[in-house]
Image (tube, rainbow, N blue to C red; front, side):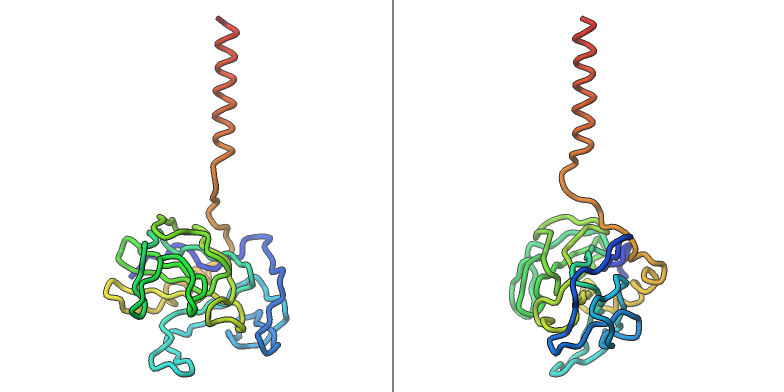
Length: 217
């Protein structure tokens, strides 16, 4: 079983939804735990909803959904649940795709391989903020929640799936429900970018040392 360390859809303290969210038929998206397809106000709360749809068969499907849908507001941070690496390429339904990219079905997506041999899939995001081949830590920002791919017109949600080393899909729900109940979704993504503050401190200390030595000589 994969060791999941972070809840994938975050609602950091002070973060609020700023975009209205409606389905293509005009019905509003949910705000409470009553279910993924329930109605609610047009500005969804930042609290995600775990919708256990692993075994559900959608219209036209011959097999179960094989994933967990997590409702969220547009722009909510999506982070990696575990440390690992994004593969350079993946084989999906006979096609070779980049490990992080875009497809008609998944929209903007990311695959991550963890150290235990499990492969994690995050789909329908607004954007992808990582690259194929990149090493990832648990909590690293992958993108933002949306409804891209074949989810267009539905409520924004993260499609999250996990496969074992044999390619068999396993239900992520048992791993995520404890994190959800412990309010682990109320956290910040890992900070990224160039370490300007440590660099500035180091340069300042070096300059002070240089001036001190020069003055005493």
